[in-house]
Length: 93
Image (tube, rainbow, N blue to C red; front, side, top):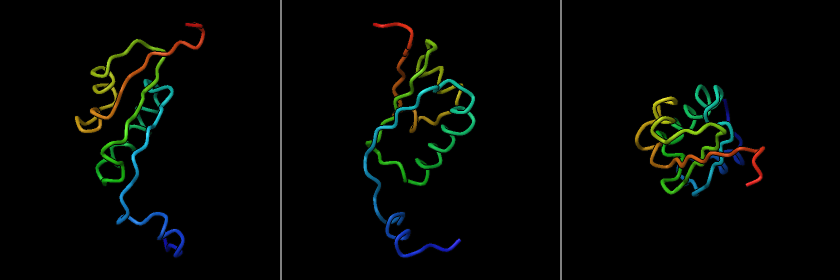
């Protein structure tokens, strides 16, 4: 695959990524476990996820970070960027 000068400028690996916050709804679901967390692991491994970036894992289930780490097979480095939040959309509080 060849890149244009514009894509080279936008996706240059020499540029450092900016810090960001990723909010992942359905963090205990199959899609997150099989696709999203492995993709985030790869971005982190390739240094394309800024060290100050954070991931908010939102779930309806009452799950701890340790349980999510084991379920999704997260590395300790990525798990240190993750916060778990329980959210029930039917609960007004």
